[in-house]
Length: 390
Ligand SMILES: Cc1ncc(COP(=O)(O)O)c(C=O)c1O
Image (cartoon, rainbow, N blue to C red):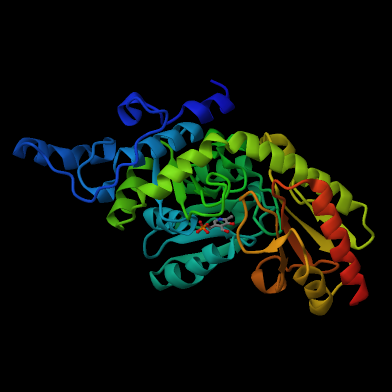
């Protein structure tokens, strides 16, 4: 089955859909049993897709998780109330007091905070590595290193990591690998095929695609799945079936949306590249983006997210540009149908291992599904305002 066909087919087993096209939305806390024997047996089968208590999920949950696991080529998928809880639960599943964790210096800020605050409180030591390290990451591995985390490309400065090289080092040392694969989704990069143990996504972004649901997932291989599943359930993590239903609906159009986001983002990035105010483009398909060669080698496509570095501008002029944008809205997320813009202030403060050095401010765009002519006009007017306020 090709990917676009999978997006239509997955999770639509007749036992969940009945005669309808879509799986039913089954809301439940309590599940009632006909016999004592059935009641005693069901908890043992809960992790195999048998309803026994709402926290484990209902048929809506199982339809969503089966679809996501198959798409990722995984042994299992756990659904979480947001991407951040998918990340934190995955980390907690494989770490204990006294362990050492390796995190890319460019990692999503809340992930970093969780490591430096919560995990530190529980006795886990984190070191931050240069995201461009490949096999050389072996120099940072210690006897007690239990997890190497990756995020590729990272969602702000867009470095693409050499995942196979990092995984080969991790395997030599028996270290679990976890990746934040929110950018690619399994459509454009399947981490488990590259030997990664756990692939995490914020489904809040492209899987849902409409900026109205918070949702996270973690898919794991045979080796990691029992541990991930067991610990995530112990943490009491469960997800509203309304959100899962919406996520499953988003999944059906993921392929066409991603292609359009990618095409429009390339058009806007190519236009920006020609502008004299722009120092360089940080889009994984551009040679000016660190790790571009790994993107070309490992990924089958991109999306609407990229950044660019200006060669001029301060807080005042950047605010003049951003405050009056017509179509680009200012917001922290991405992956919806709408275009977004943000100025990444304090880039140097976000790093501890590799100092951030750039000609000027970094602006991140999410290119939505609007007409690119309108978006380019909006950006041109914004750059005029930037120049006026220098
Ligand atoms: C790369 C990345 N990972 C994880 C998250 C967290 O996802 P959520 O907002 O669903 O918790 C985000 C959110 O912006 C993100 O950009």
